[in-house]
Length: 141
Image 1: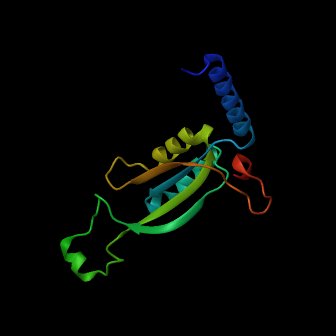
Image 2: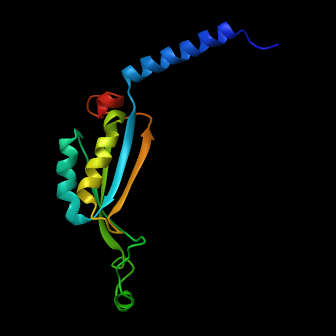
Image 3: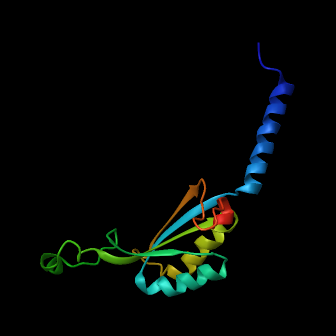
């Protein structure tokens, strides 16, 4: 027959308690990656600082998308690398509680309303470890 409803409720409560304890120790984190135009980097960085981002990593990047602005004539004379659009790749890991503020900060400073302004990618992150201190979870960021 079916399982005892009372034991199932107790099991669910135990799982929830473990979850709450885990969250209070480790916390939930999001990795936010943004591809933006090079001329928007300064405003994006300042906006991220204002919303409480503790650190970022920046990469020079090149790529193409729907907004490729290269004319057919220039395509013939450029190398494959030169044909790609210059972009800046911004990477940060934040507490889940501020991810909406982070996205808004990037949108507000990087968007011109045009195709080609960039993209934002958001992933769940299981954990982070600070190499110097050994701290884990949100305490590492």
